[in-house]
Length: 139
Image (cartoon, rainbow, N blue to C red; front, side):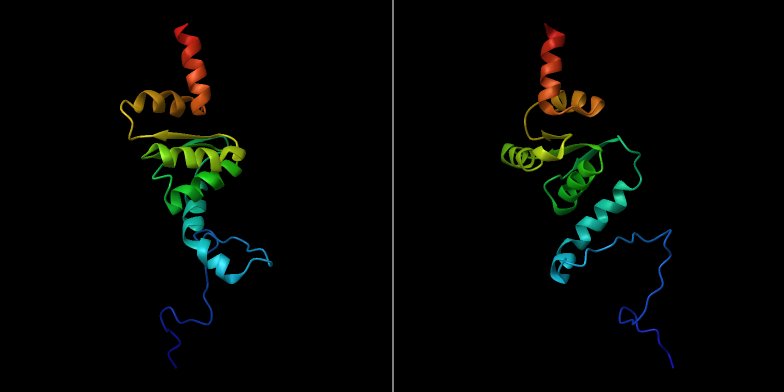
């Protein structure tokens, strides 16, 4: 009999070198796993290509994948820089991820946002660190 039923399979064989397989805690409900699967798996798949300590710039940082990438990257020790549109979003991310460590947020909707982004991106500094350094450099 033909046991190839498309997505309706009883068993699937994955290549562990090509698939992203992550353990799920036993106390996590299936609805919680399903809710976070797409964005979390996409973020983990993306982050696995970077060496520890890398500076990673995330566009669309308020979206599901962008936010998951910022959170998981910060937890893994990366220097994360989120690009967002709007002060409200920038403040929200900065507040929410303040305890994660090295997460900087740049609001790309403000005029001349590049002047903030360039030093933050090139050095992996937080916005306040970049501002303090710029003030010290200009005297």
